[in-house]
Length: 254
Image 1 (cartoon, helix red, strand yellow):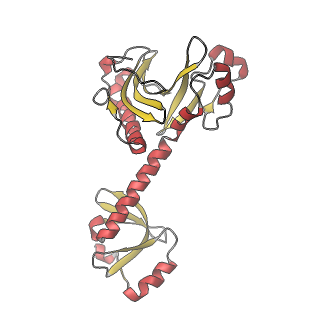
Image 2 (cartoon, rainbow, N blue to C red):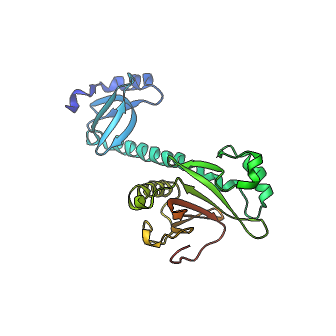
Image 3 (cartoon, rainbow, N blue to C red):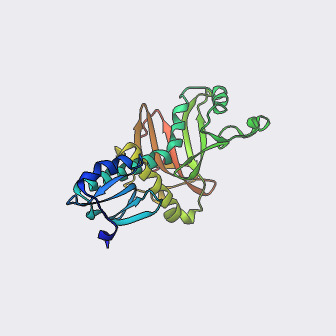
């Protein structure tokens, strides 16, 4: 019973108890304000709240057993935690801000060595043969995304893209779609709903062709356009994020 988990605390003692609580713990009270329990907010799981007591134990009970003010506080803490998790899970997207469109390849090659968020890399002896594309990666939402560069005929940077670890085409509507959904959810938490949705959701497998990417959602981040979608490279399918200073007109394929 929930009542057995609550501690009856006289109102005259609440102030002194609060004074002794740890910095992250507080007293959570019932609607009548007659019972309270000390704990640190852990999470909301469905209709339950989970608290961590000063002894390290977790207590779970219905959120409705709390006062309206404490329910609202719990919901806010859960929302803040979700936003923080989304921000952390997509922190690697900040890599797009490290480069300037129009920079030449030599400048880009020098810059990638100084960016701590980038992982991987290739030996100088191999750089000329394999180039920069795919040599470095970042992590987004628990997955590896290889960084690719597009240069124009004048050797100037025109676009950046991040491509997830590849999936077999047979996993397009299962594992790849699940990864796309997780990534999109994280981006919605980070940037809000995209102002443009091109494919009415997850791109259909039938529109994905070799060497092409299909954008499903578009966000504008500062002066740059961020496209989320899927693509196919060498027979494998991936989640693809493209960053450009241009807006592309939606077509059947890109």
